[in-house]
Length: 64
Image (spheres, rainbow, N blue to C red):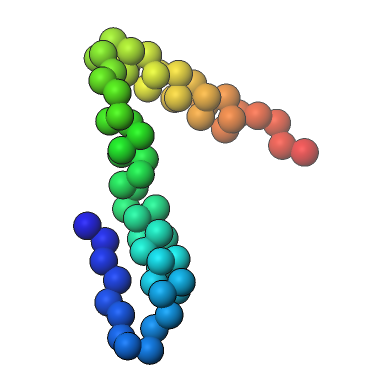
């Protein structure tokens, strides 16, 4: 779990922003969204394949 060490002179808004950044980088919110509902293994496989296909298409797009 991310944590922020504060001194007495640190501002609360800075601490909140720093905590949010650490949570974002740790991927905690993304993990929560994934685990919010049960996903059947077959559906998970289809989603993973679709994501790989999107990445492949994006990589092969012509650049301007």
